[in-house]
Amino acid sequence: MRWACIILPQLALDGVLRAQEVGDAPLAMITGGAQRRFLQAVNAPARQLGLRPGMTLTAAQALVRDFIRVEYDTLEIERSERLLAAWAYRFSSHVSLFYPRTLLLEVESSLALFGPWPRFEARLRQELTDLGFRHRIVVAPNPVAARVLANVHDGLVVDEQGLLETLMPLSLERLGLPRDSARSCQRMGIRTLRQLLALPRSGLAKRFPAEVLLQLDRLLGQQPIALDYFLPPERFEQRLEFNFDVESHQALLFPLRRLCADLAAFLHGRDCGVERFALHMEHRSAADTRLDVGLLSPERESERLFELARGRLERLQLSTATQALRLVAEDLPVFVPERRELFDDRPQRSLVWLQLRERLRARLGEGAVLAVHARDDHRPEHAWRLATEDGSGSHGSADKRPGWLLPQAKQLKENEVRILGGPERIESGWWDADDIRRDYFLIETRTGQLGWAYRAFGEAGPLMLQGWFA
Image (cartoon, rainbow, N blue to C red):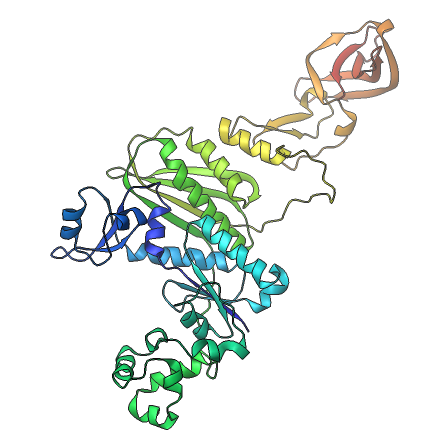
C-alpha cells in the first residue's frame, strides 16, 4: 500500500481567507484569555509588517496600528478538516484524520482510476488550491512514514526500498517520538534516526518508554497502525463567518461561490447530487434569512450551483446586515451524469435545455418558467395545461396534434389550402357544458405550412384553422 499525507500548514488562516476578500490587508488571528491575548497566525502582508505568531496583541498593536483581527476558532478548523476529508473521499475510500491538520489517503488502489501518481498528484494539488487551502504532499509505504517525511519534504515519493535511507538523516524532533524521550536522546548526543537505530534495541527498551519502540516500528513499517477511516455524513452543512457587516448582495457572492465549491466537492466525494439546498443569512439581532434553492434534477457542478444560487440571491431583499452565510443540503439523491454523444457537435458556450431552464427559473422566479403537460381529453382546447414542474400526464396522440393553437379559430378560404388528411371526428365534452362535435383535417397552405382545421359536424361551412404544426 502507498499512503499520501497531505499536510495543511495554515488551515485556520485559510479558513478565514476563504470567507472574505482580504487582498493585501494585514490580518492576524487572535487567541488567549482576557488577560493575555496573542497572535496565533498571520497572513503574508501582516508578516511583512513585522507581526509574528506568538506576539502579544499589545505588542502587535504598538507595531502596527491598523490590521484585521479575527478570533482563532478551533471549531472552524474541525469543520474545514471534515470538509477536506469529504473531498478526499472522492479519491480513496481509506481517508483518515488521525493526525491533526493532516489528511491520510491510501492511494495505490486509486492509481488505476486516476492515472499515474504525477497526474494524480497534480489533480489533488489543483483542487486543493481551488478550494483555497495551502498544502504539502508526500507519498510513502506507510502512513506514519508519510506523516514524518511531510514535516520536511513536499512532493517526495518514496518506496519501500528507499524508505530507510530517506528516514535516516531526519532529526529526532521530526520523528513523532515522545518529547521527553527525544530530549533525553539529544542530551546523550543522539540527534538523528541513524544514530538511534545504531543502538541495541534491548538498551532502548530499558532506557525509554514502550512508545518509543512502537513509534520506530510503525515508522519503519514493521508494526501497523490502527486508523479510523472517515465516512462522509448524510447531509452537507458549511458556514462562513464574516469579520464585518455585509449589506449588499455583491459582497455575498465571493463567500457564496466558496460554499458552492465546497458543496460540489462534497457531492463528488459521495458520488451524489443535490436537488434542493438552503442558504441562511445570519444577522446580529434578527432571525436568519432563509433562501431555498430548488432544482428540477440533481446537480453537482460548482459553477452551475453558484449561478442558480446567485440568481435567487439577487432577487432577495435583505432587511439587515449579514454576519455569516450558511449552506445546508439535506436531500442528496443519486446523480446520473448527462449522456453525451461521442462526437458532440453542440457549439461551445451554448447551454443545453435543462441548464437554460434552471437559469431562467433562478433569474425570473419559480412560476415564470412553465411546462406543457398533455391531458386525457380529445378536445384541443383541453388537451394540455401549464404546470411549474414536470409531470407524468398522458401524452396520448399529442404527436398528431399541433404544437401551437390559435387563441381563436380562424376561417380559411378553400382555394388557399390543400387537405392532406382527415376527417378525424372529435365528439366530446357533454359532461361540462363545453360540448364539441367537429371533423378535423390536416391541411397545407400554398407556402407549405401544415395546419389543423375543422368543420362543424354535419355542416358544409368553411374550414376553421385551429392550430399550426411546427
